[in-house]
Length: 308
Image 1: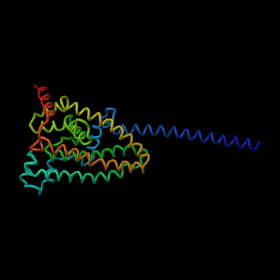
Image 2: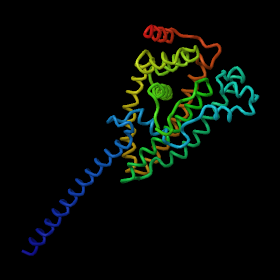
Image 3: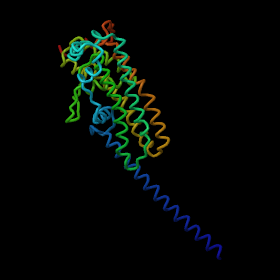
Image 4: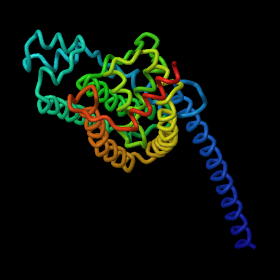
């Protein structure tokens, strides 16, 4: 009788323990679901109900120092490399290759990439920091800092190779649609997204040939370049969702997350920047011997016809 009583007591204890484990598991699942939703809501900056490249760009530009002033950057980089008169003329819109050898321009570009890459290595170490409730803040911050470094390089390379100032409203923290789409094309080139290169080359050509701004804006928002922007955005939409999802679980496994996060961000940063540099150094804006291709001509012709 005593053994039976003991056995029943042990069963009761086991059942009670199992019940508590079940309750804890249920609560943990609910917490994870709520935290995951909170993370997505925090990353969805434009409030369209999904995580996309626009959200990432807006997040990144909220980081102090990401927005780059073209005139300040060019003066800092070119002082001592050419005369003050030539520096001023480049700031005013003169092509840099007219005053500095293209090899020196490429050397400046490589230095920019290397300097930013060192900053990324510091960010990488923090990517696996555990969060709990803090995940809601740390995951968007991780994304903002990493892509902020990429976008800072993108702006500097664009200015170095002939593009005009990226207009960003620091107070309202926003872009107009044309500017946003231009940045999306650059990001597409960085990640090797199909057709992003042709879109950026066409844009550079239009700018270099003095095509009217309203025509360029139309091509970027409704016309011939817009379908390319749309396909790049779609590609990034899938990527961003995966990155936020992966980042969420890396926070729950700090050691592994730190290694994975640090390795991926540092390893992929330079190739992304190199892709953009290699495209920007050979456009109508940056290369006096640039050879036009049929695809660009066709896109521009269609753009002209749409306005006539």
